[in-house]
Image (cartoon, rainbow over all chains, first blue to last red):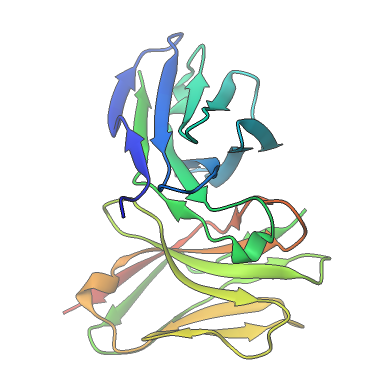
Length: 116
Length: 116
């Protein structure tokens, strides 16, 4: 069974550009969550999608957006990049959207974004 | 809001020895789940162990076990017979058990080194 696949693994952008990151969940998983990991702030929740609908959103500016497609694949977009957006962006998938603790998240290897 | 604190930024252990990583959390909720995730240099977060707050028995997974003290809001991870492959960042995480996929709240992590 393939795991959570994130593309690209590495990318470099300049300030003001935008970026789109992709996440393919484990087959059969319908919920996709995104987290940002930085040395200073640690792991912070961005948003979660289930059945193509955003169900939860973290405390990030509107420059951060996402979507989920009918096949459960998800993308996140960051517009007008800032230096502080340099981070590892982790995607996680889970089977469903209820019984939080029983619903274990499986993470991908992340997309490392560097903003110059 | 819930918070998770890992007071040991770095730890080291001799191969085959036992090490305990500390984690405390703050919450006013009574039903929740606690997790330990491992992040090796490959960056992929791997679930090590999970504990449900209503279960008094401490969770165990092979060489990994937890000491869950609900009243003290403490959730430490013990790694027995440490192996070189255990070297990684370890994150403690909290998740509310209420309906819907509430986000994981992570601690800042503990970097574990294993000395041969």
